[in-house]
Length: 231
Image 1 (cartoon, rainbow, N blue to C red):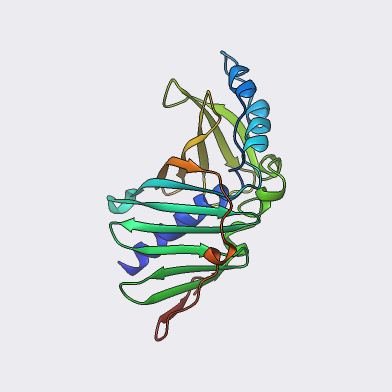
Image 2 (cartoon, one colour; image 1 turned 90 degrees about the vertical axis):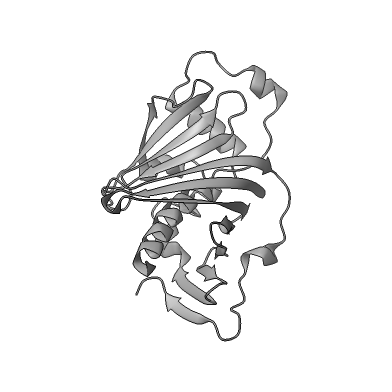
């Protein structure tokens, strides 16, 4: 089960790495009223997402469902997430067990309090190459790392963007962003890999507010079992 847990964590890290660069300031009434009736181009959507989700602190509730298809395992989880410019994030899982994924932009910590276990990795190993912190300073980097197209939406109230990595990756085949047509909030993110595994995260209760930087630094508890993520 330890290997399964770490595999799920790596899938989550890929989603997190994308999410760190796309949340920002409030949409104005003028922008809402100007939302076109027909689907905009993917370039227009990227421009609007870049204007809305670029470098602001934010928090949200999330619900996640991960499917490991080969093992026929579905993992459901929920909790709260915080982001802070540049590249800082904290995912606190509340269900079905408590653990946290924390990054200060350099170091990645995964903490399981029940086992007093800390997994440590290099944040840029998982959030580089057009993912993660790269998007914080310039959302247009999405186009450097991915081929972006419009996809069939899963909801009439949303637009969907499909992102395919320009460099082939076994652990990441495509990312689907589901975007609210009226507010341009990103409502959900769905990630697929070459093993047909799938992770979907739904966001709610978005709040844009300053966050204490200390929230993104982790102090290892005394006596904790420490593992390396890349070993």
